Length: 162
Image (cartoon, rainbow, N blue to C red; front, side):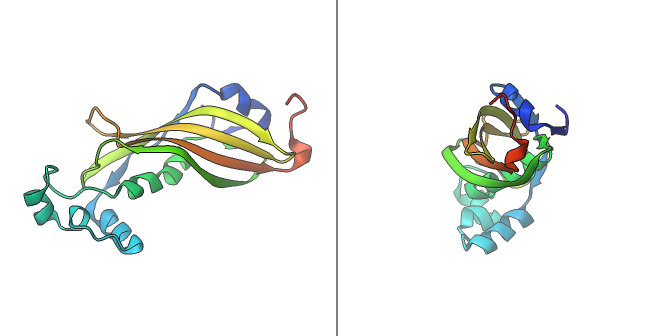
C-alpha cells in the first residue's frame, strides 16, 4: 500500500486490508503512565507481584482502554495519508470488544481494513475501519473494533465521480 493516496482512490479500497501497523511493546512503564493519566490504579495493572499471585495472567495486564488508545499511533504507521486531506478527526466506535488481555511486556500491532468510505456533505469523508489488534505469539486478538474517522478536505478537491 502506498504511503499516500488521492481522495478519488479511497472508495476503491473498501473491503480491503489497507495496513498492518508496526509492533508496539506494551511495557510496565507504559501501563503505569496510563494508570496515572486515567486514575485507574487497579492492582491487575500496577502491582506485578500481586497480579502474579492473584490473577490467572502471571503478572500485570494493560488496561483495555490503553490498548484501544494505541490505535491512533498504529494507524499513523500504516494507513495511507489522503493527499487532499486538511484534517482528520476521530468520530468514535460502533463496536469495541476486548477479546484477550495484553500482558505487560508483550508486543501488539493492528490490522486495518476499510469497511466503508462515504462522503458527507461537500467536504468530509467518513471512513469506517475494521480493526484487529494482534498480540504477538497469541491466537486471540487483544481487541476488535469498528472505528469511524472523518477526513476533512477542501470541497473543490472532491472527486467528480462520487
